Amino acid sequence: MVRHKGEWHASVWFAERDVGLLLQFLRAKKDKRAAVELVAVAFPDKTFKGTLRLDDIAVEMTPREKESVLYARVRIDKESLKVLRILPIGANVRVKISMAQKK
Image 1 (cartoon, rainbow, N blue to C red):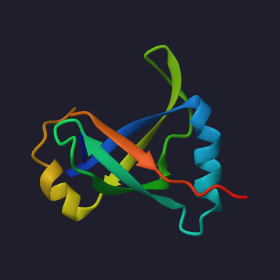
Image 2 (cartoon, one colour; image 1 turned 180 degrees about the horizontal axis):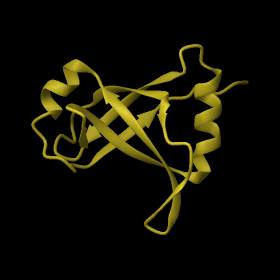
Image 3 (spheres, one colour; image 1 turned 45 degrees about the vertical axis):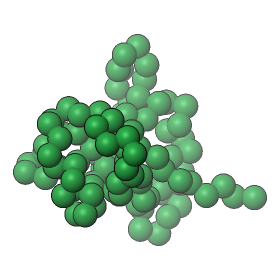
Image 4 (cartoon, one colour; image 1 turned 30 degrees about the vertical axis):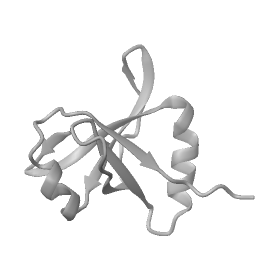
């Protein structure tokens, strides 16, 4: 987690192998956003909610820990933020995005 201009959000890095599917999914959605579930290491038994918006995704890949990744910012819902805000900057959070598969 990081603090950005007074607003809290989760910073996430998507592996290069997932980028194409993620961008295709978001671009196909009318509102260009996806619901996200967050699990903080400090609260492993709780699930929090957030939103990933297409315009919150970087435009180029970045090297990180010997991999190419794409940075994105997940906006945390107000109710979830009430709990997560107590965590220090840099606390680890995992995210899950459910993308419907086309048949």
